[in-house]
View: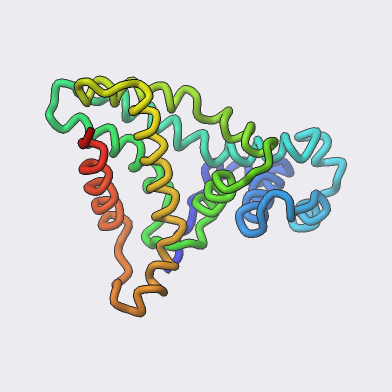
Length: 216
């Protein structure tokens, strides 16, 4: 099964800048950041090096644009959904988890698998030991992390800020790992695991996270 990412900014794909972002995202997702050269990008995007320099200035800035194009809209939806939570409700913890999980599933189509650009790229970012890449990723999350930490301390009485930070990390790790390795699990099960719809996978993930994050 495959999971395809809907273009987040379709009109931009018709421009040279949009093509460079789209092609770079696909190449980075498949091969990693270090293995992809600007020449590979420009050839695939039917552009030239001058176009990269004009629109981005450097490979690092191109990586930043790719990450922002994919992660930015997801984080905006996360914060919007988080802002609508009723913290007087007994289901506020589950609502927080949904606010973190749902926007990721919303940018996908009907199938779940490991060949999706979004999940591959995020997994590349998480796994990268390149400080340049790490700094680019970190730029996307301070506000999101702060808001989710604050929300968790409101939803779970007595939860410390340190524990809340760790719970957000665990939640992000479980999401990225589950989606990126889903196809591997299908193969490892030898056919005993039947491919699930995104809704089934999301439901199981939310249940798992809710139980784990409820315990202190």
